Each structure stands twice: as C-alpha cells, then as structure tokens.
Image (cartoon, rainbow, N blue to C red; front, side):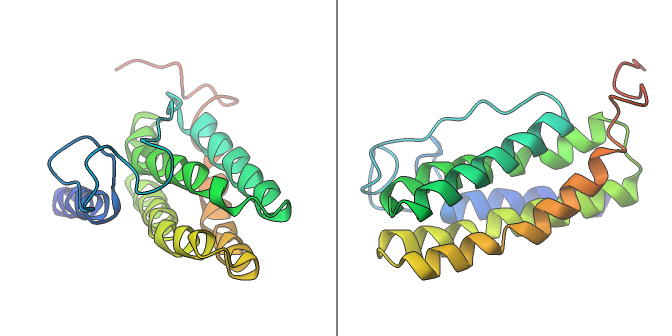
Length: 166
C-alpha cells in the first residue's frame, strides 16, 4: 500500500510537471516564465480543508465552466479547469485525513487523477475556440466527479468522523 501511495505521489508530481504551467517551481514545462500561456497569468485557488467541501468546489467550478461554454466564453474556461486540477491534486490527502478506508482512498486517487488528466483536453479545445469539443470534454468530468461524490458520505461530517483527533 505504501508503494501505491508513493507511486501515486510520483504520478501526481509528474502530471503537475508536465501540464503545470505557473505552478511556481522548477517544473514549468512551458516556455513562458510568468505562469500560464496566453491565459492572463497564474491561477490561484483556495483548496478547502476537507474532502466534502473540496468535492463541492470541484462541482461548482465545473458548473462555472459549463456556463462559460454555453455563453461562448471559451477563453475563460482555462482558469476554472486549472482550479479543478489543483483541488483534485489534494483530494487523496483530504480523503486520508477524513478517515476513509485505504480502498476508498485509492478510488478517490484514481478519480482525482482522471480529473487532472482532463485538463489538457478541455484547455486545448477551449483555446482553439471549438465550443462543441469543449462541451464534449466537459462532459468527461461527470464520471470522475460522481465517483468522488459517492465517497463524500464516508468523509465525515454527518456521521461525526471529521471531528475526531488521533
């Protein structure tokens, strides 16, 4: 299990390094030096401190992207997609802190990685001004988000697992 966590951490780091323009470290990946290429600068997001709120944040960002796509404001899709990617990076850690079983954390990690992997597709479609392709890419967010939401019931809150301290 420890190997899987190490592997997941490496994969997440690689995903950020490969696609993470503006991540502020030596992994830039893009030729630009001040953040995101032609997207108005670095994107910042406040990641909620618990799993349920983080999943809710991802849902609201996805809804925001849907509204932007519907209005044809494809250039504004990038920041919301980047924020989803950054919140998704933290989900396995938040799931672990919420007291989820290791098997659930593994499923959260897989769904979170799937969300992170969708960034390039939606970003390229939006950058190219292809509304239908951007909408199709957005639809791919539904399945991983549904998987993440399914685990929210096991993340404390209503059943008092969130307030315990060990």
